[in-house]
Length: 96
Image 1 (tube, one colour):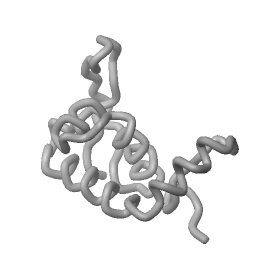
Image 2 (cartoon, rainbow, N blue to C red; image 1 turned 180 degrees about the horizontal axis):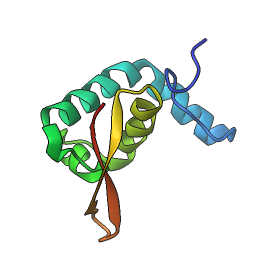
Image 3 (cartoon, rainbow, N blue to C red; image 1 turned 30 degrees about the vertical axis):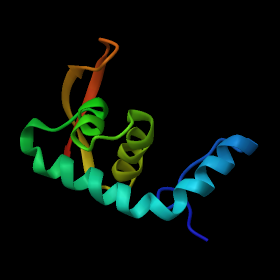
Image 4 (cartoon, rainbow, N blue to C red; image 1 turned 60 degrees about the vertical axis):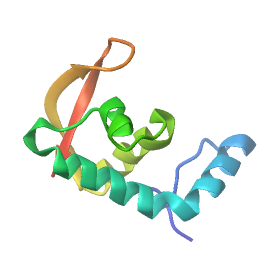
């Protein structure tokens, strides 16, 4: 059995566990898509909102992939910040 970040995380609540179980078969593909998009963005990087828009996906589906990819050492916090959809500053991710 895989563990985070190779398996989706959850909060030990039945609904969270069910969501993680549903996502598990797609996780590798989603991580690859996210990593490729961030790598393609080069030094400009992407925020989670920008990543979701680029992949034409819901932010709530793709944002957790950034935490997983960071844990794997595949992307990093660039130190840049840009506003997200709420106007708050968001991490800009770049390839490691």
